[in-house]
Figure: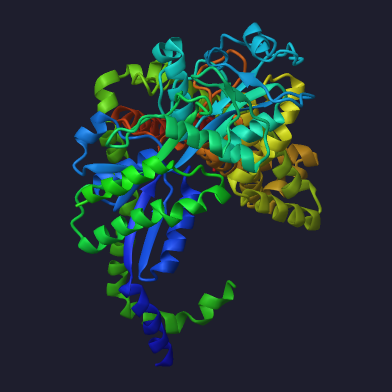
Amino acid sequence: MRLALSLLALLVPLSAQTLVNGAGATFPYPIYSKWFDEYHKLHPDVQINYQSIGSGGGIRQLEAGTVDFGASDQPMNQEQLAKSKIKPLHFPTVLGAVVATYNLPGLSRELNFTPDALAGIFLGKIRKWNDPALARANPGVPLPSSDIMLVHRSDGSGTTFIWTDYLSKTSPEWKSQVGSGTSVNWPAGLGAKGNEGVAGMVKQTPYSLGYVELIYALQNKMAYGLVRNAAGKFVKPDLASVTAAAAAAGMPDDFRVSITNAPGKDAYPISSFTWLLIPSQIQDSAKKKILVDFLRWMLGPGQKMTEPLSYAPLPQRVVAKELKAIAAVQ
Amino acid sequence: MAAEPVRGASRARGFLGRLRAGDQVASLITATFAASVLLLAALLVFELFRGSALTRDKFGWAFLFTGIWDPVAGEFGALPFIYGTVVTSALALAMAVPLGLGAAIFLSELAPPRISDALTFVIELLAAVPSVIYGLLGVFVLVPLMRQVGAPYGVGVFTAAVVLAVMILPFIVSISREALLAVPREQREAALALGATRWESTWQVVVPYARLGIFGSVFLALARALGETMAVTMVIGNDPKIHASLLAPGYSIAAVIANEFTEATADLHLSALIELGLVLFLLTILLNGVARLLILGTTRRGTAQ
């Protein structure tokens, strides 16, 4: 009897909770789980579940109506929006960046990369480390004559999307030959699974080069290069230069914007927002109230939690714009 | 053990009598369970077939014979993946079957029982190791080794085949050993009595007698090799091209599905991945069928069982 009572006592608070389910991007998962956890502490009657199943999966689940909100590292395109029965609104949450990481034995200096050099390497045209395109950008650096061992992501990934989106913007040849997407037909190199796969491969293979998320490179203390931005300056990727890219880029009213190759002399050019996808019409008023309240909280106190986890916070201007846009959730 | 049923027979007969009607119920229930396996397989094929309608319509049979995989342009061909899957599995079997069979013969016929039991325990432990662990082992041990041997990246088709061979070895050893141990003692004694040496009796009498069990172990190994995902994707290089060298990177069907499915947003891309699943399913059936035919051939020639 006592057992049954205590079981009941366990069940009662559970049933009193409102569950909100979301799914999507893996890149912002650490900060999202932190946010949902902190939010749950403030509102013990609300439980927000988030499954990091990938941006593509998040969009599909949202369209199918199996989750209350989605999350994606790339904004939904016109075609997807037109097809979807649920019209999602995009809300940028944090910023990320992708960096070129490499393994050059004996090299202690950071390398400079021009957009042309990066495109040339990934197109398979620049094959040697001492290629003139690399040597010109790195005067005085003793570059070896070895082959560049190129590593890219094998799994479909928002990281790949940001990287190829940048290459498409800076290299017409890349745009026509490969294009941008979460998985692309790579002209050169081999694939490794996940940031950890690329990082492991680069760490293991001398003279290799790959790309990983900035957070991953920071946390694992990997060597990564500076990239020349649209203003012609070589910029080191860090939280400040990523936020600078977001501040410099224009922001349309629906927040669906790519900020790669952003203008501004301090902007790191391979940066991107990541978005929460919130349905514009939410039938369940309790869930709607929670999502709206969470968005406001995320844009306020939530933004202060980003830097310890190495995510760049949103620029103030974007926060103000989003706070206004929340009114569109009905 | 054998005495038990005899002692309890009189009591059991009454009990069974009362269950006579229950027999039919039991057979009906178990038949349903058996049918559910068929149903499951049919459902699987149906779902894969339905999910891949888009690419089947667009590419037709060409899907199987073209080698371009370009999710951005919406062009899909399965050939590099089929190649990678078949070649890695075949190489893995070529390495693991002789090794495994040799080990099984030693354990069942030649080793002292205590050593045999201890080794078998370890081998069965190996069979239970999750494949991602073998993948890690491949990444940290085999890949650097392969780089020294001459594979430019260290990862590639051959590396994947070696990891697969290591993974399927415990299955082959463990099941083949069971099959060899199940060979009646009289078979061995008869061979020895006819003047055969220990090895002759093992190789010419015991092994052919246990043939079916040994083939069974190879089937299981093949199935695991074909479908293995995690360990393969960690060491194969994930490059959807067919290179002339076995040391160059490649790709397998299971690996590309695992890699690209979560982030595939375009319908055509999704459909292509599902069709790859269908191809893997059919490939497994085809290869198992071929293997079974091979067995039928050898059974006719060999000792009857």
